[in-house]
Length: 197
Picture: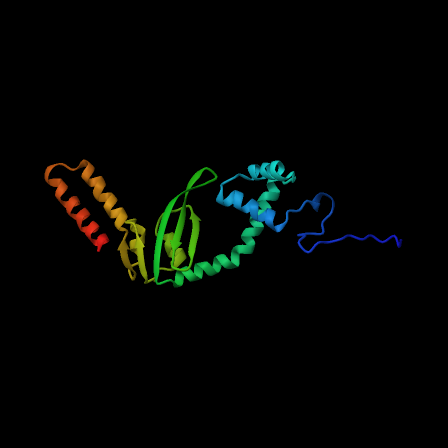
């Protein structure tokens, strides 16, 4: 009866905003938006449509985008620590694969260590990316395919991926004739014996 304005608040609310800014997503809905966009590849428009159809929640594309960006900001300290853990690792398995950014070819780099996996999306596929992640003096054991940029780590011990080498042998055998089959067959047999051992 005092005429004062009272507004309740739940501990899980993300904001006290009212009016146009009152639209909020809770922590679980934000996590679902991130999952839909980053793991399942749903566009922000499809994330918006999902929330509308599944839950009757009016979520804008920009709202879904902001939820993903906020989650990324919250994860930044953990991401930095993963980078430190990977850099300190004594055994590492890097690889890269094509990745589309705005319809253009970029590269998704993965650096797999015993306790952590670091991902980087970069425009290039050269030695500058692993150098950025590990530093040029990284000197552990690196298992990788035959991609030349990994050879830039001169202090590291390198282990070529045997599956890639077997694939190359098979590829050589497809086009080989007569005596040219001897070498890839011998290498393939040696690698298979090594794997069996």
